[in-house]
Image (cartoon, rainbow, N blue to C red; front, top):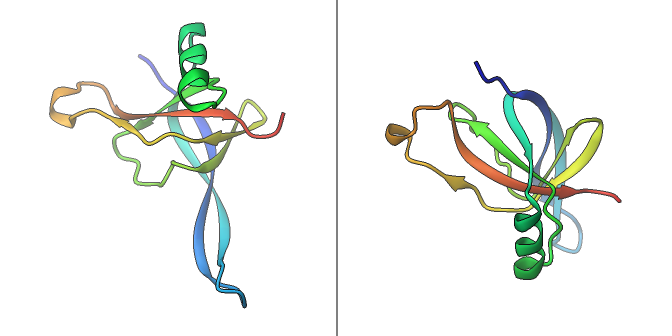
Length: 111
């Protein structure tokens, strides 16, 4: 049986605005279990670099039961910080027999 790893999601939420009317964010670390993490192929890396200028390194597949916001968030796995930069690729639950239904792209946060 396939089982993912535990990923730390650093979820940013807007908590207010500062004196210049700019948003102020708070960050909360959340452990998300059973996230599939797999490396991007060389073709995917080259295609993503040509299309968006982002350096795709890993894909994250998130369980159906997860309700967190992943896009534009920082995550940590393999003791490295990563940035989730894509909108989710989402499959129809009824047509997907696995327990994962959303896939995100991530790049290294600090190189």
